[in-house]
Length: 175
Image 1 (cartoon, helix red, strand yellow):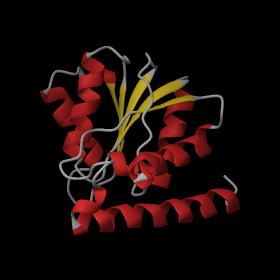
Image 2 (cartoon, rainbow, N blue to C red):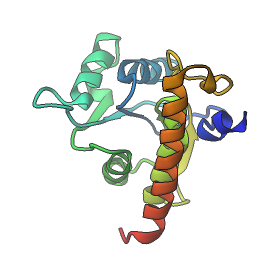
Image 3 (cartoon, rainbow, N blue to C red):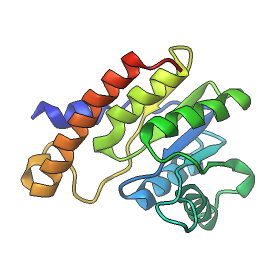
Image 4 (cartoon, rainbow, N blue to C red):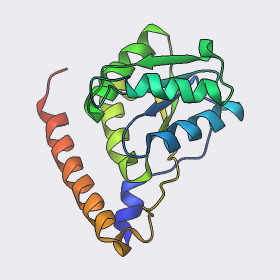
């Protein structure tokens, strides 16, 4: 089933300027993957992005707390707390990257979300930036087996719809 492989592009890891972790489904797994990449010295900086789902602490602040508890120095973490969508994650993180002279990232999200995240980041960063796709493990969704559970089928088809919408949006918006 090629759909799973389409949604979840993976690149060979390369040393980069930063690891970007965006919140969403299974946020804790995403940040733990980002921490592991940092500890394995793939990049010296971690950027976490995501707003609060409610009036509480932002997802980015929560991810920073987890990263610090797992050994990343606070000085190696940049947080972006306003993004509520993948589009906003990419837009706001692109601004952070520009102001910090970051030219290459490892983009960490859930596997089913990787393609759409990549498309949005590529749009805002352009072709001069290196984006390496690297997904966190998901507790249920698999590239080769997404159809086994009704909710992972729903998630897959919803993600495909979001990609179609994103592609339309990316071709009709002036940024």
